[in-house]
Image 1: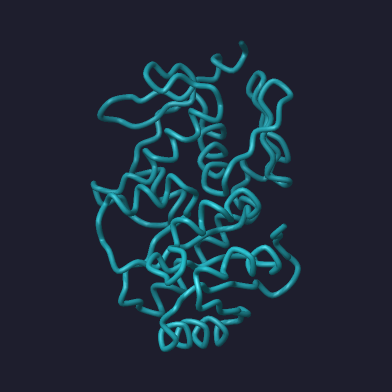
Image 2: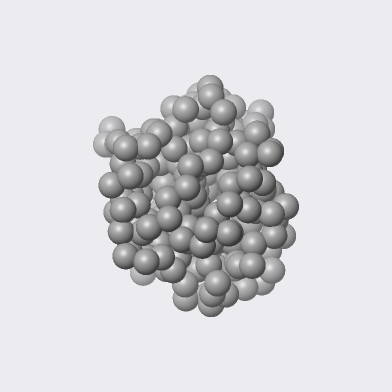
Length: 241
Protein backbone atom coordinates (compact mmCIF):
# COMPACT_ATOMS: atom_id res chain seq x y z
CA UNK A 1 0.00 0.00 0.00
CA UNK A 2 1.22 3.49 -0.82
CA UNK A 3 1.95 5.72 2.15
CA UNK A 4 3.30 9.15 2.91
CA UNK A 5 6.54 9.95 4.75
CA UNK A 6 5.92 13.38 6.33
CA UNK A 7 9.24 13.53 8.19
CA UNK A 8 11.37 12.88 5.10
CA UNK A 9 12.03 14.83 1.95
CA UNK A 10 8.82 14.74 -0.05
CA UNK A 11 8.95 11.97 -2.67
CA UNK A 12 7.07 12.60 -5.91
CA UNK A 13 6.34 9.95 -8.51
CA UNK A 14 5.96 11.32 -12.05
CA UNK A 15 4.15 9.11 -14.57
CA UNK A 16 4.99 10.64 -17.96
CA UNK A 17 5.98 8.99 -21.26
CA UNK A 18 7.59 12.12 -22.75
CA UNK A 19 11.24 11.58 -21.80
CA UNK A 20 12.26 15.19 -22.41
CA UNK A 21 9.36 16.58 -20.36
CA UNK A 22 9.85 14.06 -17.55
CA UNK A 23 13.52 15.04 -17.31
CA UNK A 24 12.65 18.75 -17.27
CA UNK A 25 10.02 18.31 -14.55
CA UNK A 26 12.08 15.97 -12.39
CA UNK A 27 15.23 18.12 -12.62
CA UNK A 28 13.31 21.27 -11.69
CA UNK A 29 11.48 19.69 -8.76
CA UNK A 30 14.67 18.08 -7.47
CA UNK A 31 16.45 21.44 -7.66
CA UNK A 32 13.72 22.72 -5.32
CA UNK A 33 14.22 20.07 -2.66
CA UNK A 34 12.01 17.16 -3.74
CA UNK A 35 13.00 13.64 -4.75
CA UNK A 36 11.41 12.48 -8.00
CA UNK A 37 10.94 9.00 -9.43
CA UNK A 38 9.82 8.66 -13.06
CA UNK A 39 7.63 5.96 -14.61
CA UNK A 40 7.39 6.16 -18.40
CA UNK A 41 4.84 3.45 -19.18
CA UNK A 42 1.20 3.58 -18.14
CA UNK A 43 0.74 -0.19 -18.38
CA UNK A 44 3.39 -0.74 -15.69
CA UNK A 45 2.47 2.26 -13.54
CA UNK A 46 -0.13 0.70 -11.23
CA UNK A 47 2.10 -2.22 -10.21
CA UNK A 48 5.09 0.07 -9.69
CA UNK A 49 3.08 2.66 -7.77
CA UNK A 50 1.89 0.00 -5.34
CA UNK A 51 5.52 -0.73 -4.46
CA UNK A 52 6.69 2.88 -4.08
CA UNK A 53 6.30 5.10 -1.02
CA UNK A 54 5.04 8.29 -2.63
CA UNK A 55 3.94 11.60 -1.11
CA UNK A 56 2.47 12.85 -4.40
CA UNK A 57 1.72 11.38 -7.81
CA UNK A 58 1.90 13.51 -10.96
CA UNK A 59 0.05 11.75 -13.78
CA UNK A 60 0.03 12.43 -17.49
CA UNK A 61 -3.46 11.83 -18.89
CA UNK A 62 -2.37 10.41 -22.26
CA UNK A 63 -0.08 7.46 -21.61
CA UNK A 64 0.76 4.32 -23.59
CA UNK A 65 -0.74 1.14 -22.18
CA UNK A 66 -3.06 2.69 -19.61
CA UNK A 67 -4.21 6.31 -19.47
CA UNK A 68 -3.93 8.55 -16.43
CA UNK A 69 -7.64 8.40 -15.61
CA UNK A 70 -7.56 4.59 -15.34
CA UNK A 71 -4.37 4.69 -13.27
CA UNK A 72 -5.96 7.22 -10.92
CA UNK A 73 -9.07 5.05 -10.49
CA UNK A 74 -6.99 2.02 -9.58
CA UNK A 75 -4.50 3.75 -7.30
CA UNK A 76 -6.76 6.19 -5.42
CA UNK A 77 -8.28 3.54 -3.09
CA UNK A 78 -4.78 2.80 -1.66
CA UNK A 79 -3.23 6.27 -1.92
CA UNK A 80 -4.39 9.20 0.20
CA UNK A 81 -1.83 11.77 -0.97
CA UNK A 82 -2.32 14.43 -3.67
CA UNK A 83 -2.70 13.41 -7.32
CA UNK A 84 -1.93 16.08 -9.93
CA UNK A 85 -2.79 15.55 -13.61
CA UNK A 86 -0.77 16.83 -16.55
CA UNK A 87 -3.02 17.22 -19.58
CA UNK A 88 -2.88 18.71 -23.05
CA UNK A 89 -6.66 19.15 -22.95
CA UNK A 90 -8.31 22.22 -21.46
CA UNK A 91 -11.88 20.86 -21.60
CA UNK A 92 -14.11 21.13 -18.53
CA UNK A 93 -15.27 17.55 -19.12
CA UNK A 94 -11.78 16.12 -18.61
CA UNK A 95 -11.24 18.26 -15.52
CA UNK A 96 -14.56 17.26 -13.92
CA UNK A 97 -13.94 13.60 -14.73
CA UNK A 98 -10.50 13.77 -13.15
CA UNK A 99 -11.85 15.39 -9.99
CA UNK A 100 -14.64 12.83 -9.74
CA UNK A 101 -12.19 9.92 -9.79
CA UNK A 102 -9.94 11.45 -7.16
CA UNK A 103 -7.54 13.99 -8.70
CA UNK A 104 -6.63 17.06 -6.67
CA UNK A 105 -5.56 19.45 -9.43
CA UNK A 106 -4.63 19.86 -13.12
CA UNK A 107 -1.78 21.47 -15.02
CA UNK A 108 -2.29 22.21 -18.72
CA UNK A 109 0.61 21.43 -21.06
CA UNK A 110 2.98 22.94 -22.06
CA UNK A 111 4.13 22.89 -18.46
CA UNK A 112 5.58 26.06 -16.96
CA UNK A 113 7.97 24.77 -14.26
CA UNK A 114 7.35 27.64 -11.83
CA UNK A 115 3.59 27.16 -12.08
CA UNK A 116 3.97 23.43 -11.52
CA UNK A 117 6.17 24.03 -8.48
CA UNK A 118 3.58 26.44 -7.03
CA UNK A 119 0.81 23.86 -7.50
CA UNK A 120 2.92 21.11 -5.92
CA UNK A 121 3.71 23.31 -2.91
CA UNK A 122 0.04 24.29 -2.55
CA UNK A 123 -1.13 20.66 -2.66
CA UNK A 124 1.40 19.64 -0.02
CA UNK A 125 0.24 22.51 2.20
CA UNK A 126 -3.39 21.51 1.73
CA UNK A 127 -2.70 17.84 2.48
CA UNK A 128 -0.70 18.65 5.62
CA UNK A 129 -2.03 19.77 9.01
CA UNK A 130 -4.20 22.89 8.84
CA UNK A 131 -2.48 26.09 9.88
CA UNK A 132 -5.23 28.34 11.13
CA UNK A 133 -5.92 28.48 14.85
CA UNK A 134 -9.46 27.20 14.49
CA UNK A 135 -8.42 24.21 12.41
CA UNK A 136 -5.51 23.18 14.62
CA UNK A 137 -7.94 21.68 17.16
CA UNK A 138 -7.52 17.91 17.16
CA UNK A 139 -11.22 17.24 16.80
CA UNK A 140 -14.16 19.15 15.41
CA UNK A 141 -17.54 17.68 16.38
CA UNK A 142 -21.02 18.44 15.10
CA UNK A 143 -23.56 16.01 16.47
CA UNK A 144 -22.65 12.58 15.10
CA UNK A 145 -20.04 13.98 12.71
CA UNK A 146 -16.46 14.03 14.04
CA UNK A 147 -13.21 14.82 12.25
CA UNK A 148 -9.70 14.62 13.67
CA UNK A 149 -7.55 17.28 12.01
CA UNK A 150 -4.24 15.71 13.07
CA UNK A 151 -5.02 12.15 12.03
CA UNK A 152 -7.24 13.45 9.20
CA UNK A 153 -9.97 10.93 9.97
CA UNK A 154 -13.73 11.29 9.61
CA UNK A 155 -16.45 9.45 11.55
CA UNK A 156 -20.22 9.71 11.15
CA UNK A 157 -22.32 7.94 13.80
CA UNK A 158 -19.14 6.07 14.84
CA UNK A 159 -18.64 4.79 11.29
CA UNK A 160 -15.35 5.61 9.55
CA UNK A 161 -15.78 7.58 6.31
CA UNK A 162 -12.96 7.46 3.75
CA UNK A 163 -12.35 10.88 2.21
CA UNK A 164 -9.79 12.07 -0.31
CA UNK A 165 -7.38 14.85 0.65
CA UNK A 166 -9.49 17.61 -0.87
CA UNK A 167 -12.78 16.18 0.36
CA UNK A 168 -11.39 16.23 3.91
CA UNK A 169 -10.06 19.78 3.44
CA UNK A 170 -13.47 20.92 2.19
CA UNK A 171 -15.29 19.28 5.11
CA UNK A 172 -12.79 20.78 7.55
CA UNK A 173 -13.43 24.30 6.25
CA UNK A 174 -17.21 23.79 6.20
CA UNK A 175 -17.25 22.45 9.77
CA UNK A 176 -15.02 25.25 11.05
CA UNK A 177 -17.55 27.69 9.57
CA UNK A 178 -20.75 25.72 10.30
CA UNK A 179 -23.85 27.85 10.03
CA UNK A 180 -22.20 30.33 7.66
CA UNK A 181 -22.68 30.52 3.91
CA UNK A 182 -19.31 30.11 2.17
CA UNK A 183 -19.05 31.39 -1.38
CA UNK A 184 -17.29 29.56 -4.22
CA UNK A 185 -14.81 32.42 -4.23
CA UNK A 186 -13.96 31.83 -0.57
CA UNK A 187 -13.77 28.05 -0.91
CA UNK A 188 -11.64 28.17 -4.06
CA UNK A 189 -9.16 30.48 -2.38
CA UNK A 190 -9.14 28.46 0.86
CA UNK A 191 -8.79 25.07 -0.82
CA UNK A 192 -6.78 25.79 -3.96
CA UNK A 193 -4.92 28.99 -3.18
CA UNK A 194 -6.24 30.81 -6.23
CA UNK A 195 -9.01 33.20 -7.21
CA UNK A 196 -12.31 31.81 -8.49
CA UNK A 197 -12.59 32.42 -12.25
CA UNK A 198 -16.35 31.97 -12.51
CA UNK A 199 -16.01 28.69 -14.45
CA UNK A 200 -14.11 26.35 -12.11
CA UNK A 201 -16.47 23.59 -10.96
CA UNK A 202 -14.03 21.78 -8.67
CA UNK A 203 -15.77 23.00 -5.50
CA UNK A 204 -19.17 21.84 -6.81
CA UNK A 205 -17.77 18.42 -7.69
CA UNK A 206 -16.24 17.99 -4.24
CA UNK A 207 -19.41 19.12 -2.47
CA UNK A 208 -21.38 16.57 -4.51
CA UNK A 209 -18.97 13.76 -3.61
CA UNK A 210 -18.92 14.81 0.04
CA UNK A 211 -22.71 14.77 0.22
CA UNK A 212 -22.79 11.26 -1.22
CA UNK A 213 -20.22 9.92 1.24
CA UNK A 214 -21.92 11.59 4.22
CA UNK A 215 -25.40 10.33 3.33
CA UNK A 216 -26.87 13.66 2.28
CA UNK A 217 -29.61 13.57 -0.36
CA UNK A 218 -28.11 15.08 -3.51
CA UNK A 219 -31.57 15.97 -4.86
CA UNK A 220 -32.71 17.62 -1.63
CA UNK A 221 -29.61 18.18 0.55
CA UNK A 222 -30.29 18.94 4.20
CA UNK A 223 -26.77 18.73 5.65
CA UNK A 224 -24.70 20.68 3.13
CA UNK A 225 -27.15 23.05 1.48
CA UNK A 226 -26.73 25.02 -1.71
CA UNK A 227 -27.71 28.64 -1.15
CA UNK A 228 -28.37 29.75 -4.70
CA UNK A 229 -26.34 32.71 -5.81
CA UNK A 230 -24.33 32.69 -2.58
CA UNK A 231 -22.55 29.40 -1.94
CA UNK A 232 -22.71 26.43 0.43
CA UNK A 233 -23.91 26.08 4.02
CA UNK A 234 -23.12 23.24 6.41
CA UNK A 235 -26.15 23.03 8.71
CA UNK A 236 -25.03 22.40 12.34
CA UNK A 237 -28.28 20.87 13.62
CA UNK A 238 -28.56 18.39 10.71
CA UNK A 239 -25.84 16.15 12.17
CA UNK A 240 -27.73 15.52 15.42
CA UNK A 241 -30.00 12.94 13.81
